[in-house]
Image 1 (cartoon, rainbow, N blue to C red):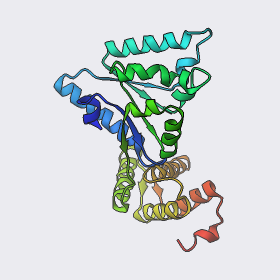
Image 2: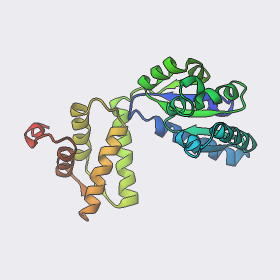
Image 3: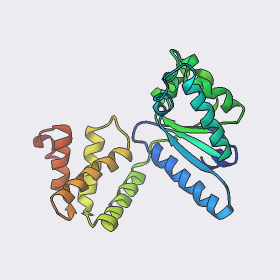
Image 4: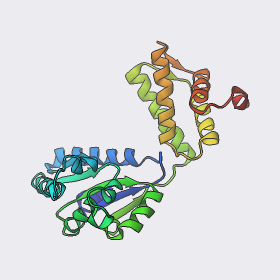
Length: 239
């Protein structure tokens, strides 16, 4: 990803299921580029943006197009890379159809390498984008985020537990981590690790902090899981 952004100066789409770690990979790449830039005196900047910010202030015909032109010019001056959140909205923002959308306006600038964009989508969103504006998708380098192996997930959850211990003073015992993994894998299969694991454990930590406790144990995990899913305790006894 870093090579595609810096050396190839490609437009990049990260593709993976919800919770697969697309945002984590993207943020890690941006940090790495910024650190490398500081050491090697590389002049890169990242501009984070939601698509509706482009069109929200438009009152008259041509307003949002002018906003896009100003944005592209400023990015060029700053050697900037546009990081678009919810990038699929670019196709539905602007005109009345995908052919008159913000994405369609950006497309020739991307093809001429006057605009560099990064973003993330699910597989379903990617398929929808291909149907609506295939040329826009073709201008991107597609990088797939594969599902992690179980040992990799456990390592990430353990690292998160270490972070909570160091930064927040909240400990997570190993039984609680293992139970969280089993429950999430069994009852919430439609989301992917590590995202769903980090999200769930964050809520467990917040509950412990709210109660002015210091440890996330198995009982905290079970209570939080019941609160989130509505499953009766009987279903979780075998876990």
